[in-house]
Length: 98
Image (tube, rainbow, N blue to C red; front, side, top):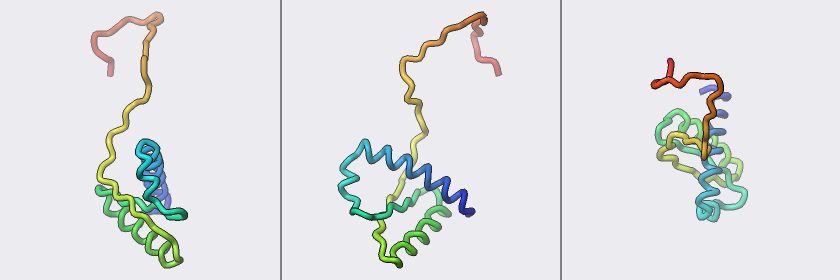
C-alpha cells in the first residue's frame, strides 16, 4: 500500500472516529493520555496489516497504543434539513433526466 493511500484511509477513519467519540463520550474516558489510536477496519486486511506495523513501531519506542477495531462504516447521510427547491424558468419532469 502506498503511503498516500495509507494516509488517506487513516484520515477518513480518524474523521469518522472523532465524530463517533463526540457522540459517545464514554469512549474518550477509556483512552489513556498520550495514547495513539490505531485503526483496524474489519473490511480492509491490507490497512490492518500496515497499521499493525505502525503500532509495533510505536510500542517499540515506548508509545501507548489503543487499537480501534472498526466493525463497519455506515453509508454517509446528508446532514441537510428542510430543503426547498425553487424552480425558475424550468419545466418539471415526471422523472429525472439522465
